[in-house]
Image (cartoon, rainbow, N blue to C red):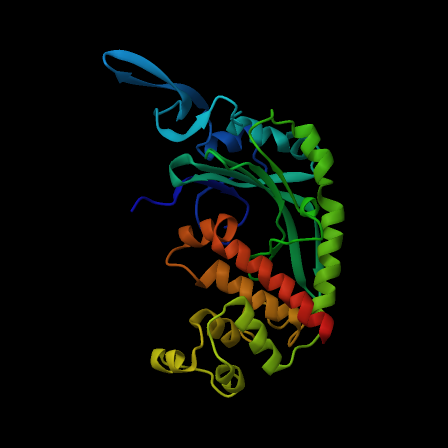
Amino acid sequence: MAALVETMAYAGEVPWHGLGTKVSNDISVDDMLKESGLDWNVVPVPVFGRMDGKEIKSTYQMLVRDTDQKVLTMITDKWNPVQNSEAFEFFRDFVDAGAMEMHTAGSLQDGKWVWCLAKISESFELFGGDRVDGYLLFSNPHIYGRGVEIRFTPTRVVCNNTLQLSLGTATDNKVRLNHRSTFDPDMVKETLGIASEKMAKYKEMAQFLGSKSYKKEIVAEYMKEVFPGYSKRAIEQANEIKTLTDAQISALGLSRNAKGALDILETQPGANFAPGSWWNAYNACTFMTDHVIGKTQESRLTSAWYGLNKSVKVKALEKAVEYADAA
């Protein structure tokens, strides 16, 4: 099986996924593009076939990487590819002004998924030392049917959990663009609203979750909804049972991921901040998705940003807010 991560570079401290080549934390946009191995373009190439000795042109085109002629996807003539350099250009004004710094960039699945992550200069701290840093994740998939997406992605520093949110409406935390129109970075910046407002909203949410305590039997129900797969009997016994064998898990109907999240409630990194709160219950779920579930760090990264675990974390947050509101 081919590696999920093709190329990657990171600045500053080692990122939570632990992957990539380290570069200076004051790296420029242009240098990050090169060091992350993304200084290549995609080129639409016509597709032809032959029938009865005649050449027939298809209405589809191949999207080909210019450095090695690798075919990334098939597109139509209405598809407007966004070059990697254009994706990086989105961050230039912010980086030059000192409002952001380039943090991580790379490609997944042989160049089909390209991203760059920039750290916002603002951060906040709660509960006597629980710091959260803010990032913007720019995803530029070279895959037909997938659009450019720019997402606000705060990270809890003590455990390096990524916390992708749904802050009200769809445009509150992300911007999606299809490839049927030309990419306009100025329009995206205006639509997104950028950093300060998003950090303030997230801080408010974190404070709320940290102010609400859970009951053990209720938090077990919460884990059941986030990681479905265990029975009412398992909820009733979750308080007493700390370590279960595979056979016991099967007998109770308790999913391994739900049990794992329950087991680390009081031991996960950062559990000393707002102990016993819905903030910790939620972070137990994000710790599982970012650091435990999956066979490798590569698969965790891919799933956390673009796969199933991204949806799991969104669900975990929404349910945590619901339970905290009812507490």
